[in-house]
Length: 288
Image (cartoon, rainbow, N blue to C red; front, side):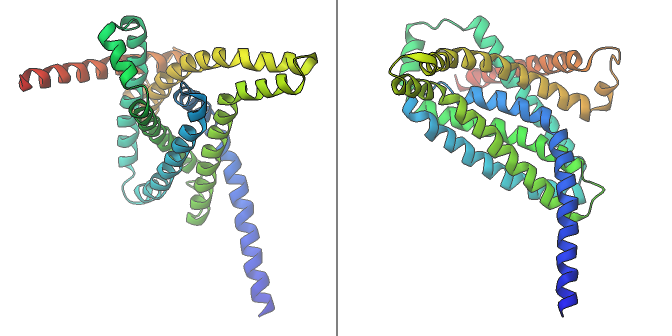
C-alpha cells in the first residue's frame, strides 16, 4: 500500500515537472501576444472617472476569466476532433481586430471634431451606457486575443499528454489574465499613488517629485497606450492572417514580418470597415 502511494506521488511529481517545463515554453511563446493584449486592454480600461476605474477593470477582468473558461475546453475539444475550426475562428477574430484598429484610425482623422448634436449625444451616453458599451467592447476584444493566447499555448504542448496539455493551457490562461489586468490596474491608479506620495511627503523632497512625475506621466501613458493599442490591434490581426493563411504566409517573403503583418492588417481592416459601412447604409435605405 505504501509503495502504491509513493508511486502515485512520483507520478504527480513527474507530471508537475512536465507541466512546469511546458508552461515556461508556452509562456515564452505567448509573450508577444501578451504584450499586445496589455496595450489593447490598458487603452480600453482607461478614460473613466477615477471612482469607476477599478470597478470597470474588475468587470473586464471577470469577463476575461469567463472568456478563458469558455475558450480553454472548446479549444481542447476542437484540437482533438475538428482542428480546422480553430483556424477559422482565429481568422474571423482577425477581421474583427483589424476592423477595430482601422475604425479608430478613421475616427481620429476624419471624425475627430464632433458637432453640437454629436457632442450632446456623447454627453448623454457618457455615463452608464457608455461604460457598459466600453466594457462589452473590451471583453469581446479580450475574447479574440484570448483565443490566440490559448491556441499558441496549446500548440506548444501538442506532443505532451492530455493532462499536461490541460494543466499547461489553464496555467497560461490564468497567468495571462492576472498578469495583464494586474499591470493595467497599476497603470490606471498611477495618479492616486502620486497624490498619496505628495501628501505623505508634505509636498517636499524626492517623494514629492516622484509623486508629481507619476501624476504628470499618467495622461501621457494613456495617450501612448491608445496609439500602441491601435497599432497592436492591426499587427495582431495581420499576424493571425499571415500565420493561418498559407498564401499570405508566403507572400512577399523579402518583407520584414512586422511590415507585412501591418500592411495585411490595415488592408483587412479597410475592407471590413467598407463592408460594415456599406451594410449599414443598405440597411438604412431598406428601413426608409
